[in-house]
Image (cartoon, rainbow, N blue to C red; front, side, top):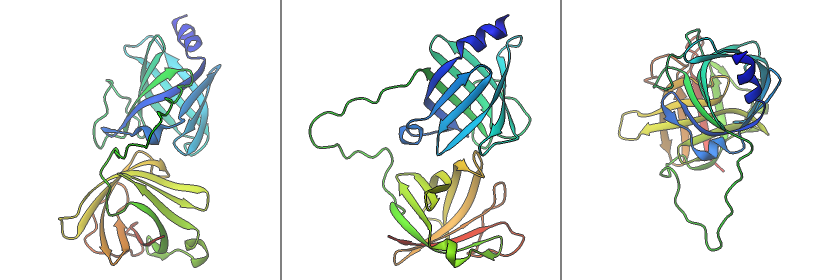
Length: 260
């Protein structure tokens, strides 16, 4: 059967070599080490700061072919992502609806859709050997005022302050246009962002690439006063805040950071 033939062809390890989410291309740094391993009808996705496991259901009677990813372990446990796919030798391309019940109809990722366009190459892709000589200082994205590591000073989520015993463990690390927030060794979220320092108040937009809001966008405002960063982020799908506050029921997150 064709379905069995495709499933046989998918067996083994695949390396994620390109990814667009909500129309935005993820950097090579975000994808480093990301793989999908298929064994039988089960898959294990490693990388992007989490491990996802589940089963694959293929339907080759449609054009394009369809794929259902049913998660039974990891952050997406209990969820099903609807996708389309194509196989071309050692290249596997998937277009995945990371939320909702509408399957993609074509191989594209547009802003605000939650659709991921993923390209995988068979086997583990070796990193190119480093050439001798001093490293080239050519960042993939311009350095911003958020660059580096910051410690959490305070946090209020949906009007509820975070306990001080937890605050001391939280830090954020920004490189270029990518930010990761960690509590100890645990990754709480990862985002790529854009910002406008000329707006009043200054604005920042998140596209979550890992964490509880993975695949979702958030609108926010920020200020940087004497090395103290303050962010106020709306919940996904909610309007951008106009003031730096979080009260019960608004689902906003207000955080204050000091550079380490």
